[in-house]
Length: 242
Image (cartoon, rainbow, N blue to C red; front, side, top):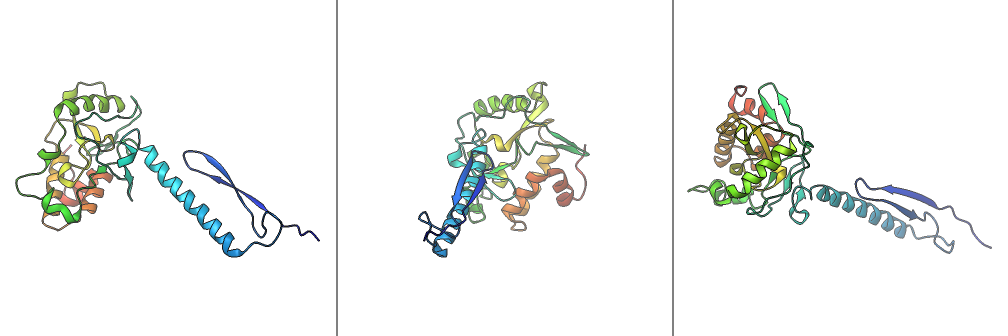
């Protein structure tokens, strides 16, 4: 006698790339005979793992217009870990795509365009040989002006800024002295005003705390990338002048 088993179709949606149709035979095999529950569990686990992998890949893929996918890793809190070549102009978002946010005492970048990016070579374990080393660090990783001048124009176009380049600073959202990525559009934005500015003062204060081991690298990076205006109040005790 033939035994009939119910089968379900599960439609699995992937966030960015494709929609895939996965067939899970629950309670029966291709021939209608009972299926070992271990096999079903394994199949379900594999499907979940594949979906998770696809989601992670899509996060990296969404950053390919900003930095090479092979060197980009999404971190908790929205930051990217990436280190594109320092001597090559990086691609930026399309003109007019990004929108700075005006705060009460300063301007914040568009988190969709400039979430912040950190150099994976700088960690709490390497502070003494990188950002906290004697003799300086930032000059050894800063891209040449032949690169940054071009990137400044691209960043201004992305943010829809038509003023001359002297009206803005090409700012590392996570500064180099806190392990920010030197040359990624995910970490570069046209900050209004010239340098030095209030954000620069905060960067120096966080660097001092970091090298005195009074704050962790991750905490300092997330604090300044998320909302440098709020971080200024927390670290320096007053709102930034504006």
